[in-house]
Image (cartoon, rainbow, N blue to C red; front, side):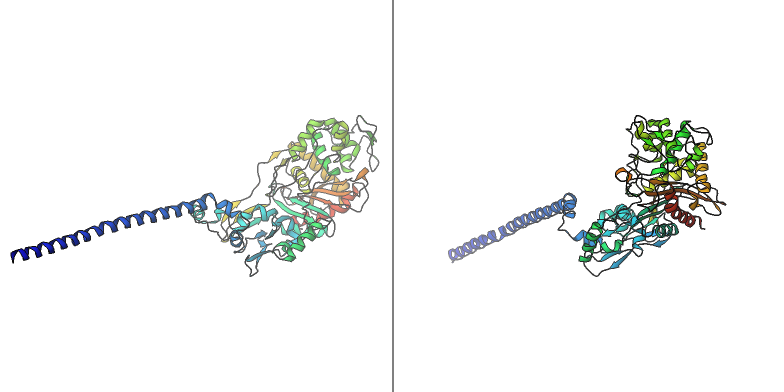
Length: 514
């Protein structure tokens, strides 16, 4: 019995111990597998985080720029674009197309403001203010966010902002009406600030035609680019012309500052015709009475011989310095979009200098540049950088950024500026610019006809530059430059008075409120 019991007990104890030993090892093995699974999951999570960081930080730009990635375009056109304002009135808009690229740009008065707004196209990008202020207008400018740093971290898009321009609506309309169906351009500036009041180029076009991504937009693009009249060319800031006799404002200022002329009414030693130095070429005038004419008479009736000789007497160095002080040869000008540089050749012989001094040879200027010349005379010899954007604002009206002029530079002495104003007033009162006269205002101007073409065979460009001050104003309020291409007129300066001066007069009246 004992042995049986003992055997049974021993056997039972042994089996139970063996079973217990097996049961005790399972928890340790399971924990090991769990730890391995945890480590693997942590490694996979780390790899995912690492890849996300690689994509978002290092590869984001590459993916954003990939043409196959439409997310940026969808987001860009998923909200209405901000607007460009003139006198508090929107001259742009957005239309819900109902398509994937949802909002398309509209331009209620497209041709009138096209040289200012440019276009915003889903196919062809942006130009002019639409391009220069794209970050604000598209809502991508971080300053549009109430908390810029937080918004940048979220990479989200804010409601678009608006751009408030310096334009005077009435001046813009007057310039556009004045040019009508003719090719040409108008630029108007407020002399005391540099604010651009009008910027017109004709023929023009409707930027709305390019807004969508339809076949109609493609056809419009081809038609506009193939048009020989170049309606998308902004002649006011991107086209340079020989300024002709309007450049005599610069030459006269250089002569007075250099002391080559000290008395406006004293005869000059200026033969008619004038033989260009070192050549047998004789320069003549359209009219009589220019031989030895005083600076006042020569400016009033635009004697080429007098001003060609004055340029030579002043010398290349001083002529170049004065021209560059006015803004010629400056490739850095932005308003905020780029402006084609106006040029005055710095490497000329005396004969070339003579021609350069009457706005010929290689001298070329944009209408905006010549408006800057007139503005400098009107503002006591100070040249102020022109600008087109007054400020940028959020949709709620808060100012995000401001425009404003850069530093002014003294381009002629104040005494010279006073005498230049006197000369320009004489042109309008008694000379070739009488068509610009305004009752109740003092107007100064200078006409010009720029020869062009092989052997000057082309029909001339008609120019007029001017400034105006109402009788009850303390300072001139507007300076204007007008160019009319291929003006149907005689070659004399009178074409500038006949074709361009009335347009300038209408713009000046609009600014003065007459």
